[in-house]
Image (cartoon, rainbow, N blue to C red; front, side, top):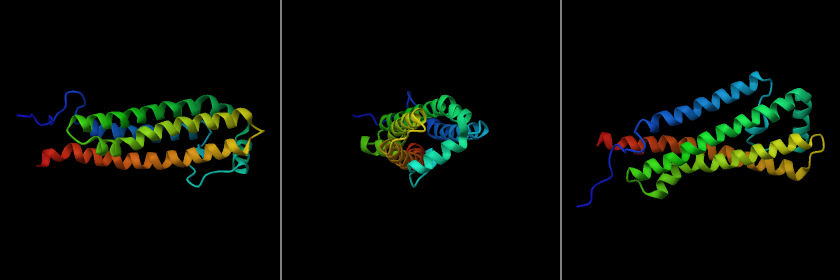
Length: 177
């Protein structure tokens, strides 16, 4: 007789499906608050429509030398740490769902948004760092790459948030049956 998947996995507790997404959203909010308090609102990283060379010049001019340095040396590394955090949560979501008997494709749909979104977030941060390093000489192709990666990251992060809700439902559903 084949044993069914355990309801309470030994590796990932059921509370993970509630507290990990709460942790991601809390970290997301705190990172934005911290950047704003440092005087560096993250306008490029939240632009759903993309941005142009003129947008980058306008923003970096408004920041000034000091805030550009803070953005480059403090805000971007903190955002990379956030990306690693939610990427790990996405990977653990996939593992936790598979260990509870869900098909891999379904688990990947639930956790893949945050996992892939984290990779695009790191690429975005590296490309914005390149823009800051080369400022005021900014290449159109660098801005186009950073803009496109930002748009993809925002879509994947949003899908990851919806996937976290679906993962919680899939994990808690057997308790209602």
